[in-house]
Image (cartoon, rainbow, N blue to C red; front, side):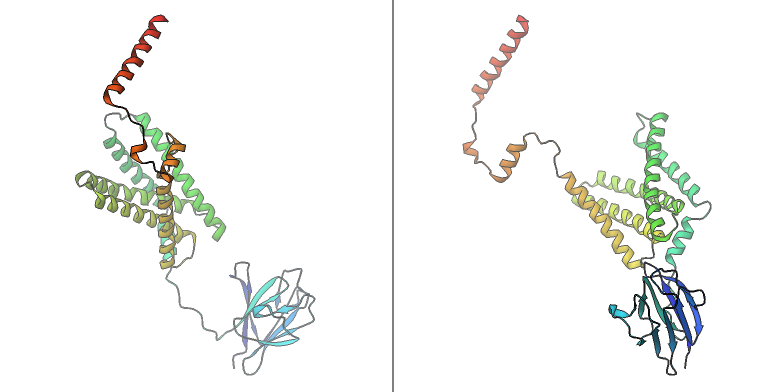
Length: 319
């Protein structure tokens, strides 16, 4: 029967902080003569002993801890308790679990995130993406503003775009730093430049279709292409910043972009400076019948306008 045990000490997020492989039994505590040394002031110098019986059962023995040893569900373990393989235990504020050497491991994951990060982090990836963006953007700007084209306008717009790229990549780099400990600013900047550069021809084609065949269908196609490009951008960023599985990452990316589109649509429907806010609000909730609205005939309207104009001219002549 398998007598080799592996004690896995867990970090705050549940990931394995370190592993210790032992034959038959393991002592856990703060003292330096333990097999598993725990840096936790709430753990006794000699807290517990983990051992395996002849039939492979894992037994945890509390050595008289001050704060106790707790098993799954938060139940306090007795002086000698049987636990299952992979059960999360807690002593003090440290969590750990016990595995056997025969415990199967999950299948190897497809490191798509690693490939995305490696592609974006190649030595020439960022310069190439920047040059491609500058070339395509310059051509597009010149063709759109050929009448008013000046170098000063081009450089001003370019500076604004580069600052926007830096802020965008910096925000993703900060999130990546918090999630994985590495900022990866270069990778995120490369991703943003590459996706925006690839989106320029798509935007040109959709605008051409909108000009040739204006209508709701073309507008929907343009909206769908924009959502697709935005989802691809967020999807790629998430692939570098996290370990979210592919399908879930796609759902998250699309949900974020759709939420932003929805917020933008709602913001666009709000008139920031309505001409008559009170009347507009009352009109929306209390519509007034047309026959109750006072009107004036054409002759009356012309007479009033003539009198007002004559009065204005007299005032100016007198002044």
